[in-house]
Structures are given as C-alpha cells and as structure tokens.
Length: 135
Image 1: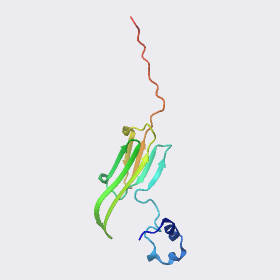
Image 2: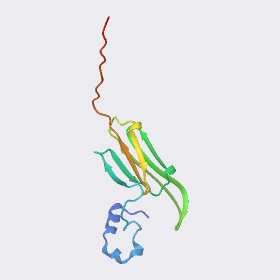
Image 3: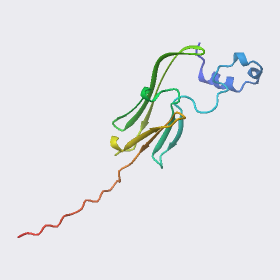
C-alpha cells in the first residue's frame, strides 16, 4: 500500500509511534547518507560527491549526454541476511555550458563515495597572432 507524501511526513513526527517500533517504516529513523544521496555538491569547486557504497566499481556507470552528467548504479539480484535484493539508481546533473567530457574526472574512495570533478573552460580565450613578414 502506498501512502501519500503528506501522511509519510506525519508518521515521522508522530509521538505515538515512538513506543511502537514495529509499526514504523524502516526508513523513519535512518540518518546519514543513503544510497545515491548527494553528499556534497559544490559548484564553486566544480565537484559532486555521491554515496555509491552498495555498488562495486564495475556496477557504476558515469556518462555525459549533451550537458547532462548521468550517474547510474545497478547490481543484479543478490542474497543478503534478509533475503534477495536488487538495487538500481540513476542521478542526473545539468553541467554548465562548455564542459567537455575529457575535462570530467572521477574518483571512488574506499568509503564508497564517488567524487566527480569537472573543469570549465575560460569564457574568453586569447588567440595568439603570428607576425609574418612579406618579401
């Protein structure tokens, strides 16, 4: 059964549910960065960091389509302590104009944080003039 978002927000703050742990959805008390959550988006440093801890490096794709940066994580059905699970997320960002794919770099650290950095080209580029003497 799906509940409206307004009802779900009320559930988080309902004092009655504090005594009824078994009635609360699993996500009510979760804190920290969840799967695919943006940990840091710093446009002045041209960097985005995303939590991808549930995925192996070969289960993560990073693509650029036009001016969109697309992060995708997907793994097939696996068994864990609760049964079977399959995870998949897609997160898209609109990059500033003028970002070239070769100027985008990514790093995945041991904590499962994918950091993407991109360089913007200068808006004005000076073109050198070569002086040639005529004979």
